[in-house]
Image (cartoon, rainbow over all chains, first blue to last red; front, top):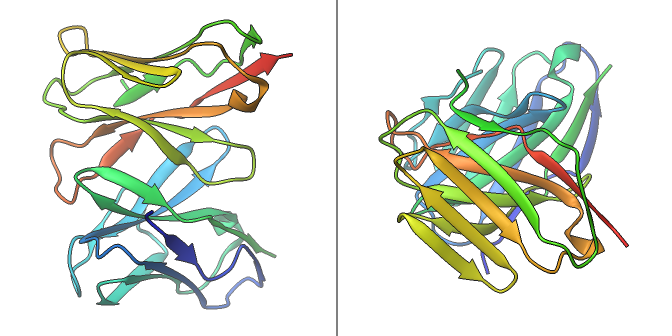
Length: 110
Length: 113
């Protein structure tokens, strides 16, 4: 079974803090993704990576950055958290187009 | 036009009935189609994928693809209360690599006991 884990299920941060969300997959997948999911807006792609040290912007990269130093790990960084970044953050990895999601991190920025 | 469109629902069916979930997509070059199930408060779970025109069956689930009409559907036979969830349709993004997907906003299904 594919296993994708995320560092936290719930996180509360203050405006202006730097926030790190970690994602690890154990299936040696090349591709990894970060999404946010908001009611009525669905899943929106923030960044993705198709190889170690490679990253590409998704549809809503503003205010975020990513890091992929090892194949199994893909980190999302909120440089200076803002209240409009309160959301559910989902990491996924994929093979042959089939994406497998982690449990998600519900981030609240106050 | 959105890349992937789904009826937002909610869709309610009685237990034991067939639930029919529909999805249309805009890019005629799309080749891969996926259905995810998402329970409230949980992450999406892949339940079906289909690449060729026609039907693909897996237990109580059948995915149907019609590329000419740019239409993909999911049928759930003998619906159970445990099928109550939001179902997301996803389609591969032709313009980008890394197996990127466009997701619909989902259809909420409620199966009434």
